[in-house]
Image 1 (cartoon, one colour):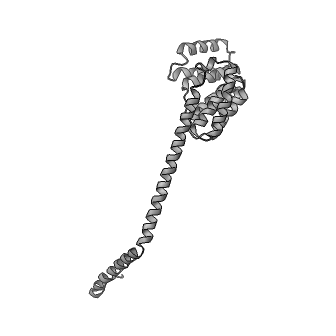
Image 2 (tube, rainbow, N blue to C red):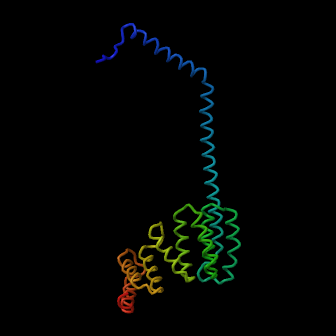
Image 3 (spheres, rainbow, N blue to C red):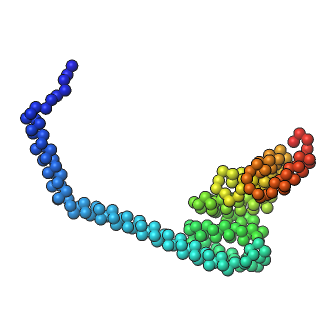
Length: 236
């Protein structure tokens, strides 16, 4: 069996100067390239400062857009839902201009959501749906998508496009949403009832009762359940 090689005294003595020579060469290289290294460090620092500057600039742009939009909202009717069509129509040009000027910023996505609300109030459901879809397709913020999903579902339901509305309400169960699971199930029950899909409607009303929250009330859900069970064809 081969034995491990053992360094002789002469070899061991030679190791020290050899290691020292390597250290000296490294030191000499650092000395000769001091300016190069300094330039590299300075370059990295410049890039870092540029990144910070860009982030600061973008942040300030976002803040200015949000401040401008807040000013725009102060000019809106105090009671949005009760405003007449003429007042609603006047909001459209300002919203469209703001979106063009701040496209891609969070405030512009919020403006699209509000523009969709204005179109909905004016019974321009296709236009409302189009704005909500733009937010769903382009916004990166899940909360913005959640609001767009809700508005799209309500709009589709008003248009009588129940199958698409059901798809959106169902999707909200697995996404960030401002709507409670109780309300989502209640909305789904309403759609399935209109389609005479009574077992599914009953299933969603029962799920709504079990879910947390106080809207709609237990009494309302229980009354609807009783009515469905009484009127649903036997065996359905």
